[in-house]
Image: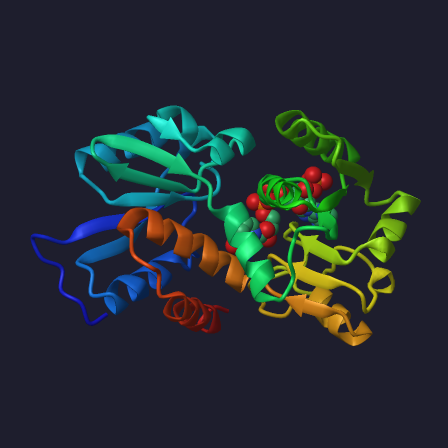
Length: 289
Ligand code: NAP
């Protein structure tokens, strides 16, 4: 790894269960090395029964902070001193900062997604977006899209969960901006045909089930930017189908990198070396099965 851990080294990390597939240690350690910071980032496999004790451990061990991933993003909120408005509204924390005796929680998933869209040349504001899925990532993504000024349709396999997400965000944002549709409803195809942005927030097509695709290729068209939040494989079947019809496509790597970059900035106050972080993620993914 080419770094020395000494008596002054500060520790950051990620709480997840399981956590062994995380690309975050490689990404953050590359960033710490690049900026010559005396910090190290480690994975912590935290069983849900131990979450409260693990959070107490951040204080006791004087960690810099941690990322929080599945399944702890919602449960962790009750153990923190402060939570950002966005994280509180979407009930999800993916970044904890320990500073001046206070544990603060943030959600960087939505802002990371918006930056990834911008990197693909697309502004969320004014776009007609279709979001596939109604789980945790969809909640952060739809919230970010609506607050940026997009019009959003949520397509989900389980219609009641799409309705739940739409009602939840409409209540939080005091709008009627989210339209829920079931994936098997005839209006689903129409919604995609009318959209200029399609975001996949389901795991359909992810390794090892890489043959799967969340919607039929016939729904895609050249006017779409297809953002697939999956990053393993780098080109999912959905992205291949998008390319085949002349639509623009982007994978989830940049979202992963930007959400991490925003966490890094919260912890260190330094400008994150985004390109170095992306290279570390790509190297890690190339080494994956
Ligand atoms: P989640 O909370 O478990 O939600 C999964 C959603 O996908 C649900 O709405 C579920 O529908 C739907 N779904 C699952 N299997 C399906 C199938 N076979 N057919 C149709 N729909 C299906 O998961 P999440 O945390 O939101 O994550 C979703 C994906 O986003 C994952 O692949 C994750 O790796 C990716 N992600 C990427 C980043 C990044 O930085 N690039 C960040 C976060 C998440 P039902 O409601 O019908 O069950």
